[in-house]
Length: 110
Image 1 (tube, rainbow, N blue to C red):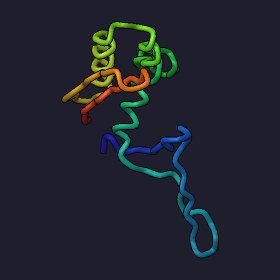
Image 2 (cartoon, rainbow, N blue to C red; image 1 turned 120 degrees about the vertical axis):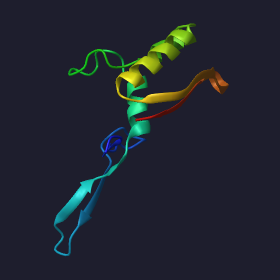
Image 3 (cartoon, rainbow, N blue to C red; image 1 turned 90 degrees about the vertical axis):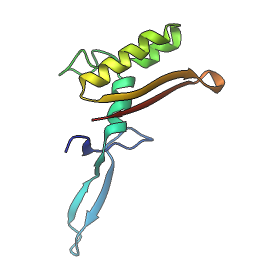
Image 4 (cartoon, one colour; image 1 turned 90 degrees about the horizontal axis):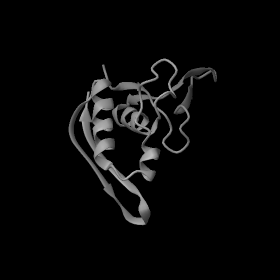
């Protein structure tokens, strides 16, 4: 099922691992499997092109947007990259929030 995979910890960015053991103390599981749609969206938006060796064209590099005044360009890049990954983008909005924070609202599904 598309959109299901190994999850990452939201705070650390590391693999989300919760070790389970059997009655003998042997490890029977650990990697947390779940819905990764939002996780994939965030990774695509955050990652700069060239960071993924296997697919060097993937990524928006939204941190570069902080120095740019062209929000429309980044809106187009985000939509293009998400659709290239198989997402159907229903809604996408970029606004400036409090304390110079950037708010990106994405409503997209595989």
